[in-house]
Length: 257
Length: 333
Ligand SMILES: Nc1ncnc2c1ncn2[C@@H]1O[C@H](COP(=O)(O)OP(=O)(O)OP(=O)(O)O)[C@@H](O)[C@H]1O
Ligand SMILES: [Mg+2]
Image 1 (cartoon, chains in turn yellow, red):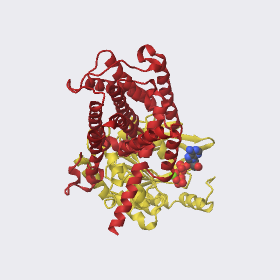
Image 2 (cartoon, rainbow over the protein chains, first blue to last red; image 1 turned 60 degrees about the horizontal axis):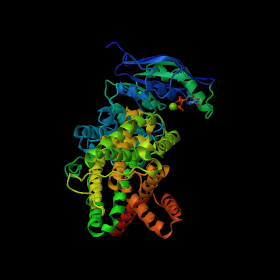
Image 3 (cartoon, rainbow over the protein chains, first blue to last red; image 1 turned 90 degrees about the vertical axis):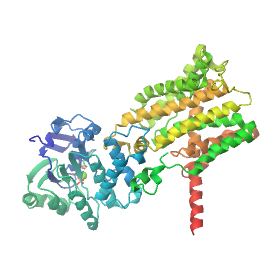
Image 4 (spheres, rainbow over the protein chains, first blue to last red; image 1 turned 90 degrees about the horizontal axis):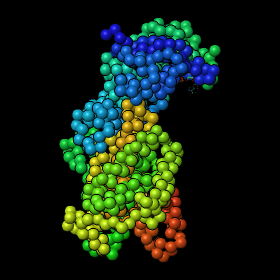
């Protein structure tokens, strides 16, 4: 019970001169609703890549439910209950929406290596897939290929696929990125439906979403965790204002210091 | 075949995943029977087409479905051919068990090579598969004590099928024997393609990196695919050896690897029936062209490939699909 769902200890990574992750430590409890904010180029996505096993950290460790996964492959981390979504939609674009979901389900269920099974007869799994699609409002476009559906639906599919894997810890990298205001509410609705026991780290620029979703917020600047607290404390702090205003003033250039 | 999935009661999800049998699919089999009864002069050509269709199907799983391009698939065809030929030559002339043994043996070879090849992607994989093919070719040429070298493997004959049907010079038995095996393997392939594994293959083709992040054991998937694809290619090779009582050492040549890839591209990748269409079109043109223009047939094939790549999306089968769609639109208009 006391064991954190995800615990990150002294994680560091450099890209050449750039300390993109600088001695980052934090923990996610079971059922956590944690948001990570920070200006463009702060190193948020790079952090998610290291947690999910896409990139290797230079130092530090990632512990998933008591198991050190720092040197494990992305695939093994998924099997242990780590799910993630991508800031830029990373889907199977020529396959249908439902095939995308079903593929994740069949990997989770361990039937993806069985060439003698008929996919359309896997009743329980298909029903689960239909439910997931409905949960995220994708039931109307299940038969369309991903490249045919709206960008908003692609963002929701990212979350739906992650959910199909029943993660214990879910990392959401800007699920509303690139969405028009009108479609942001559908992502918020989707987030509200995620299982309560799943520990979630949400990366988001949209402060409205952060306020609605998170119970704690941390600020990442130049690879360093600077602040952590309730949404109110953090979002109204001087530092956040100056960082975000500063970033906006020097729009385009990433250099903040 | 997943017929019940298209029943009115089936859920939307089941219908999206279903690949139901369509009545059109009996056409190639009826055509084959028509050749058998009406055009017995073409039985030998027909038999070699059946062999090549099975070979092209094995490649379609690898290249069309999973997106793994190879220039070394002849390695498995040749392995199956020599395995079946050598079995017969050394006393095991019962064809059915011979073919099964050759298939299993080739699948084992394919699995072992697959363990290596699964580590590689893109150009490295293409080059390595080609190099393995070249090694097998040179090896078979030099090991003439075993393979007959440049003269090929000859001097063997198969026992009657089921102990009853003799292999006549007219090739009736050979044709039906090959056709029956093709049907058996095709049904299996048809099921594979409609399975979760078949879907995973498309996933590997569409977004290899993402597959790992949905927890797919990608290496295991690829090795399993090599086992299946090489086994089927080996079965095609074994069929070739058994129906002709001869194995040409050139079964291992890169021409065979490239040729089957061209046939598949001409027919259409990743749709099974592309293998049928591509092989039939290619071999008919080859047959006619090599008779009337023996020095130019490669040129004709080359021009055809160019036309397919430039003007069609998805080869002959893609063209047929497009024509059918236009036709249906005209009808509904
Ligand atoms: N592969 C790489 N090689 C070198 N530098 C990189 C690489 N990937 C990212 N960077 C740099 O690392 C820094 C952090 O990038 P990252 O994508 O993690 O930022 P982010 O916080 O997710 O920003 P955004 O809000 O724009 O998504 C940026 O300056 C970026 O240019
Ligand atoms: Mg980012």
